[in-house]
Image 1 (cartoon, rainbow, N blue to C red):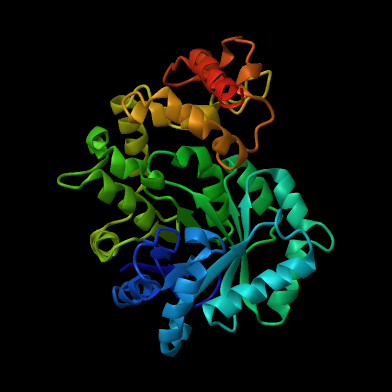
Image 2 (cartoon, helix red, strand yellow; image 1 turned 45 degrees about the vertical axis):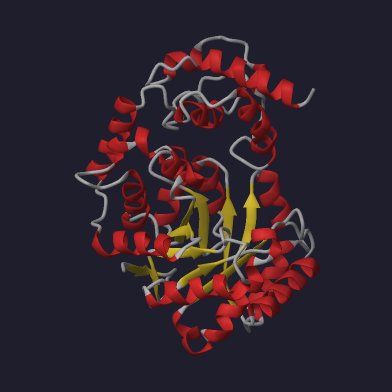
Length: 377
């Protein structure tokens, strides 16, 4: 296992983290709790959960495991989360922390996240006087929390802007081998500031595993696309912890095997991946963001194109599925912080001129706008 420095301390955290969002709920709570014990034995010492994960059962499963791990409590990191939209006051934030501690059988949390920042307005809500952040800071002063992190789905430039305010000790963001250019600026900013960086969805929410037949170019030698994607996040110098949602011991074994043998990606490796993605998936948006600066309507084109990638990777995902997912993306995903919609495109063509891959962006925006219309009829 690779271990890395944890936010300006002498503590070391495993490069592979255990994400408690993918338990098999057909199994008993004790069976699922056993996965945490197994992961610790394999060298993993970062364990992340949240209210509402796994039908609101994840924290209770963690609590069963952590009770059995009390003798190694000082060796592990445990994190949970709360949304500012659900906990807009300091008092509500305090009660949420206390509830999580009780469920987890802990006296304190190593990390608590200001969770699911999808818009700048969510960050501002958390930071307002008497708001969530104030409540979390009080919890920190009283020893209920060691570190306050932020969890966000914003693009890299906006993440960078938030982190520059120096409110947080770390950040959780969705980063993987396919989308990293979209959030790279925020990733670099966090690394430069010495913050702990936790990467969620290293397999693109399962996309890389599901479409490994089309992504063989990601691996080197006999390396599978899944192993390549894990290696990218696990060994990336800018990423502290690659958070994996584990369902089986085999999943844990794969991630730990990668961590036991992988070498860090160099700048040259990263440039190679960008080039391979462009060459091998010439219809796939890489999230470079060059299309954004010239849009007179301020449409989040890169975010829309990243959503469109799902259709391409699925070899022409059926329209029903794209229509069915579009509202979720607008509310919770990469499109939540949009200033304008796909339907606002005036087809000036500037984005297509700026696109390094010369994608038919205007046609895709029309298609996406049609999906949104159908979803809301």
